Amino acid sequence: MKRHQGFVRSKKSRRQFLGLTLGVLGGSAAAVANHYWPLKNQISRTRCLLNTSEPETPDLRFVVFGDFGFGMPGQYKVARALERHHQRIPFNLALLAGDNIYNNGEIEKVETAFERPYRQLLEQNIVFRAVLGNHDVRTRNGVDQIAYKNFNMLGRYYTFTEGPAQFFMLDSNEGEHWQAQLSWLQQQLSQSTQPWKIVCGHHPVYSSGKHGNSQKLIQDFQPLFQEFGVQLYCSGHDHSYERSQPIDGTTYLVAGAAAKLRPVGKSEWTAHSTSELSFASIEINKDELTIHGVNHNNCVMDQGSIYL
Image 1 (cartoon, helix red, strand yellow):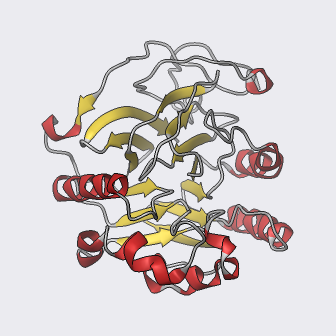
Image 2 (cartoon, helix red, strand yellow; image 1 turned 60 degrees about the vertical axis):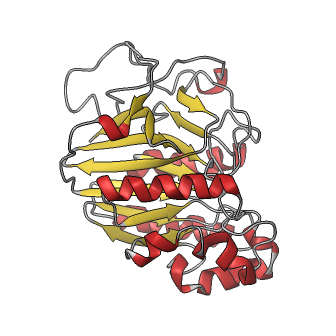
């Protein structure tokens, strides 16, 4: 695949093109240099979400965040920001990108780690759907969390459809389930009739944070994503926010800054990265999916669009 320069005019060729980016490129990732689509006219600024005009109602709106289950002040800051966001820009679905209960996934800590911080959202019937993080499988391999009703997990890995999108929720912890999961994912993707295909797992495929890229996930996931047209992969694990430019047609989003922070750098394929307490808010309208990175003060720190 050749590198595409500048803005792309036709709808067909702009598939997966990020229309508006708030961020600045930097760093180096030569291994994927020929697979991402660089952008021009990048803007470096922060917009306050609360000062924007009234939003239109999209076909689907949901939020994504991970690495939250501490019961610490940082988690409550983001939880209050989610409440304010919902009051003004309602959403009905929240994807939990893993490490739902620290330190070892003990289900007896679920009140402190989840129910108390997000009580108001639970009372407003927000549907949370979780995946398992590396901390979550330390106790009973995560089976108690899979069975926990408010995580709405349909299994260790599962799929569901909401509006125009089909979601594929994975257990990215390597284990005896791995090959079966890959076969399941290939079958489910091949059968999907939804225009938008979104995959969520705890571990990043591409990341400029502490853990970096996962060569294993690049090898196992990226060919499937490219073959079946997965537009977005969401993850946590690195305690930061990062949105990639499309790599072989897929945008990679790290949203693991919902409670604690670690430094994050920039790679050649980075559209925007920052170490701020935050979550991602995603809207789908017809042939456009828009990602907003929202910090704990409810200010938009990043925005980018993907097109069918």
